[in-house]
Length: 399
Ligand code: SF4
Ligand code: SF4
Image 1: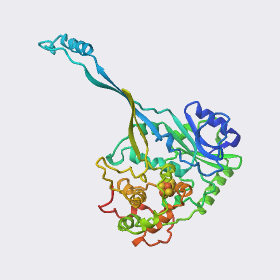
Image 2: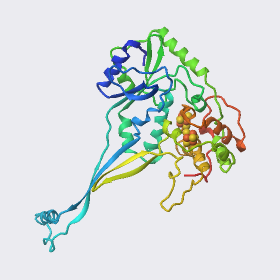
Image 3: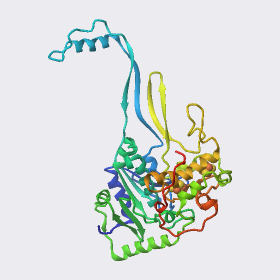
Image 4: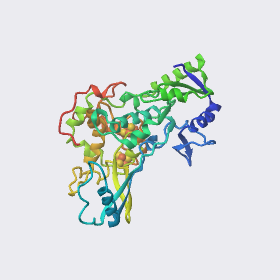
């Protein structure tokens, strides 16, 4: 599809047009913090700050989400008797030969109502690494390889359009290219916008993206405008390096499973879980019931694998009793267990966990050390090395 151009002063009109059809979410700065926020006319979109503090995953995979409502009650004897009496009056070949001899007794029953909310959603201004986060969660919740299909996530995902903006100025904590991504990556993106002088170039990559670019304010991009977009993408790409190598990382993590390095690296970790909450692809949740008298709700809520209760079993046994076990799990899950199952990584290199960890634990350092042979620091590799080229890791890992 042809490259389009949107004048900067048409952005609000474009978002307003989108908002007529869907909830529009965009990065907005408030009290010095950039967060993905429902957009309303008059809201200024913040694109100068590269990454919002949290990824926009919470709009599809909610932090807290009720999915069942229930109500316990006693079925009164009269009601039961009426129901049975009604059954007894059935005529035709299926009619019972005799009415029940004994009257029914009251019994406790429960009414259950499922809740699935999926309003149409358009996310504007997320980065290609944020979109990759959705692609990685799609594997888990979408039933990839015959695994679990999640109705809550998929109902929202199906009606979500992702309008990404290419990164102009990667941060020192970004490492998307080390794991096969790019500041202008298109995996999972419905339309890719690039900020150039006086506006944006825009390229539709899916049918949803084409629909979004039907807004009348778009014009065909001039050659100079699409040329400027290409230059900007190249310059952003050139500023990124690869801080660790993916080659053999799965085998090395396996070989270093009992390594002393895990104990040393996790010393500073305070198990706060921040790294998992800001991550665009961490997807663990727990399930709780809230009951007030006889009515209640069942909801799921984000969990995190640093939480000591995360794997505690009903018996009280906890297979990840030590902090180092939990710490090891996070990195092994992203670069070993998940790749084994989904033939992809569970990290998009956004660097949020690096910038927001209160104790400055750096995933790149962890992978350099524990993803290298015998826990040695490995030299950096070039971008585009595929983790999937590593031989499949053998048995013995944690679940
Ligand atoms: S953000 Fe840092 S301190 Fe907190 S759980 Fe993650 S690694 Fe540990
Ligand atoms: S693990 Fe860290 S760098 Fe990787 S996607 Fe999650 S927050 Fe970003």
